[in-house]
Length: 563
Image (cartoon, rainbow, N blue to C red; front, side, top):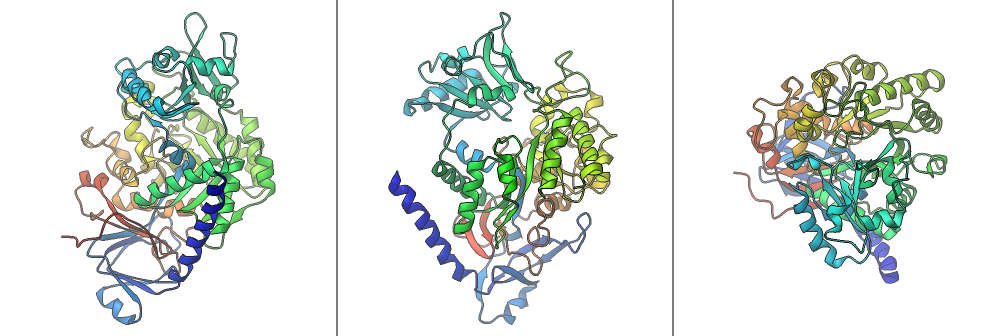
């Protein structure tokens, strides 16, 4: 283990040194079916430029043009795109990088149709685990009874070691009796404010912990080492590059991850560009804020925002609603912070020069967060910091215009709508749904949407998100014409949300997000023409190559001619 700790940084440092020469070359990518949105000082309205040749020098875009442009650069390295479609590198404006990396090595029960299916997978997975068994992805809404499971279900398979399985949205965990025992959880245990312990008719904990109650269990789990975090970063980066993601926003990091990110940034071996948000729930928040904003010279690491958590998620009924849940009488969900605490966090962030990016899913949470922003802007300022509301899923029609008035960026994940639509119809009334997943309404009023996936809650594939944004249908093209179809986006608007929208939200619209002169040459080659392929083919798009700063970072196979 010690040898691994010594060798790995040396290898990574040498890789970084080896890449510095390549970035200085002039390269000409030709024979491409290229598209790029254009910024030109306009976030909301802008043309899409087509081109067949891309000229790169020192890792940045020099010029776009037609087939003859390559003749002007006789000494450049010529790279044939073989007629494949070329797009700017895609930006995921809301993900969880280390969570994704962890998930790739943990028990994955995403899509399981029953408790039995999960316990069968657990039984196999547990054979090679001697301590805590960690997994993710269960969703009771996919099961016939749609009921929360219990510790007893897990006990049938594993009794001697603690098991902790996170719900698909990470806003609830399901544990076995050994985990309850190690954490000292009994019928007398009370949930903290902003959390819920699901109990049976006799008052005994069932094994389900929602939102802040999760900490009653997770505080006893072994903390990952810096090497663990670094390994998860590499695993996540490799996966994201294969999907065409060249930049990602990491929604909430702790102090150890913050340290790893800065260390890797200084070595110059980050796998993708990362815009990291400090976790507002971290006990080390003030220490991290005191260190100031961080930006490396090549724009691979940016830290200038705080992730704040206002409520839970819709699937676990933790999203805070103004009126009752349609499927749970006299229940409004969970506010994780009071408005007073939100205002204190915003004030602390703004005075440190950091923006605040606040998780809010339910209409009550969105209203309270908007009120908190408004109050703090009046007292402290900070309105120009490009603050965000993460998810902004269920918003009253009266509150939607306040995003524009308060310059709040709605950071939204289109695939949430197509994942949630059946469940949302059960959880919410028509009144509550009237402002739900309202991407088009936000765009029409002049708000900039920063689009993402919320991986590993959802799959990280951005073409799933683009498809959802354009169709509001599942992969079987249902419902016909799309769910609440008035909110569909055009292909142009969807692409801007996954490129320039994310760049703008990170104060990087002059650096990435489009292939314009002087910007970093981050781009991808794909096997389908995004603008012309039948809509049901969009989510099937394969990424052939991913380039960052003019350097090839991922290649699927040998690129063949597009026919």
